[in-house]
Image: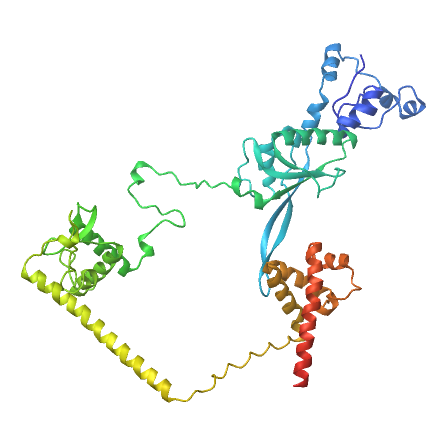
Length: 473
């Protein structure tokens, strides 16, 4: 059985097929020039070189069989690759009038070479994210996501058309293609390009907040870690005093009936103390106007329940027989009803008399005065002045966007492109300008490009008419 070499340090070479075919294909780092046994070149190098063509004398058949059983795929799986990782994301670029989205990217290499063919999809995603230090910011899905594009030198379609590796099935197919590419290039492939789109990775962010561990003895102490943990030092003296006063008010006026705090008046009425009333009550306590265990100031009570001593609103009688059959409470009830009716009817009668008098006076004035001509109508509104030459393109595109319902971002983008090519509205209306060229410049669909040209002719005609009119005036 021929001897096969699988280490670079071994001076003994294997068979011609092993040295010329197997090693350059599956283990190119072990390949070296093949020495044909018995040739003049071998004899000229001396007995040491000639001995390399022969297997060692002490090589047993079992050892030779063990070396021959080495799996070439195992050598490929242990092969390391340099990884170039590109992050892409969208930023809002502010212009003079608006902001528009812009795709931004950044590329970095991983700190160490990675054994791509021996890792799972999730392991590779974590390893690739180390290039930008985001290995803890994202958590790969168990079976799918986040998506990534993987390509290498000689990849069909190039980096721009690389397929998105989304799940484990895509990852396995990519590994099969990579193994085939390594074999076809005889091990010369050593760099892989990976692209992540951060806009699509929002759902894979690591949102777990790591909290420091505390002993049982520390459970009663205040937390001091973190950036949003409340601390007494962050409040002023007045705020602390107000908070203490509110706590005292809640303790003094606790209400089991309403489940909160209520101020109880002398007639046993409950006034619920919401957060606004508690704030005002507490501020009065801090200012020394009242006590937390006593009633609030009179102005607060008036604001809550109205002036002290004011008559309560009359209750609407209700019953089975309807409000019309409700019994009065006595003579005072009927007198109150009569006073209410009189106070309502008298102003109404007075107002009607005034209206009748005014109408009679107006009619008499109309009969006495001679017929007059119609009031002069308001002068017609003058047309807007024509735009300045420097602002023609912006005014034109703004009007076009309003007429066709285009977004501000799209109009701003078209304006920048046309300004870069020094186009004006009258140039857009030229018949000699091909539609294809105008579509290439603006990036608009073909139908909108035709509308743009038609609109430019109408708009330029109106502007020219305005300029001629102002010139004659």
